Each structure stands twice: as structure tokens, then as C-alpha cells.
Length: 164
Image (cartoon, rainbow, N blue to C red; front, side):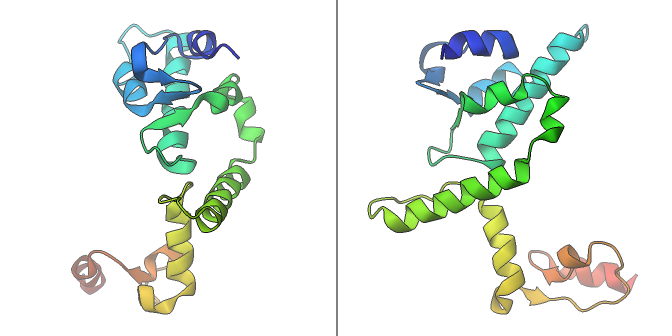
């Protein structure tokens, strides 16, 4: 596939020099190129910025690779029609990517990094391994009970909120 042509078609810009390495583009290029939407932007430019933002989310958070600074362009054709993307099972893809990354990290002896969304693994561990997170038992917190039952970073803020 001609990755430069695909970038031009869907993003309206082509990474230059070492910004595009094989089939992966630097996340810093996406951030720098699509940081600000021009004041006179039409629908096409807004869609290009939205596609670049989603591609960054995929590469930085949802399905990162072990490089930590690039995203594979194989995801870009999936963003061609933004309305159609709602029909994709993104959650399944994120879980599959994370599980494959965990498998590779355990099988390959010289692998030093784990690929995939490790925040999912961390939230699973906090829920399943009680020693990792102190439990919050407050029946007055009706919203997001699964998220708010942990005192992770700022226990003083939680105490201040519950005392008010």
C-alpha cells in the first residue's frame, strides 16, 4: 500500500523524512501537524483533524506498540468514513491487542515491553487483587461505584469530598 498517498487522501498531509518509517508514522508529527484547526476550516479539514486525533488515540492509548512514539497506519483506512466507525467493535480490538501483547511478552525471552492498553490490565488488577487498591465503602456515592470504590492517588481529596 502507498502509505504516503493514503495519508494525503485521508489526512491532507504527508509525513516527511523520518516521520514515516515503513508503515508507521510518528505521533509527534500527528500532534504537531494537526494541533490547531484553522479558523476558516471547512468540513473536510475538520474531518482530517478528527481522523488524526483518533489515530493518535489509537497509537498513544488504545493500541500502542512497543516503540512508544509511532502508530501503525493500518488503522487509518478504518477511519475513512467516520460514521461507519461506530459500527466497529473497538473494545474487542483493544482487548485483542492487549492480550496479544501480553502473550508476546511472556513467550519471547528478549521482549522488554508489553504492547497494548495497559490501563485495562491495571484496572482489572485493582478490581481483582484487593491488596493493590484500598477499598472505599461509602454508600452515599451513587455514581460510578466501580470507579469510585478505590482510593488510588488522592485519599485526602476523597475524605474532603465525603466530609462536605
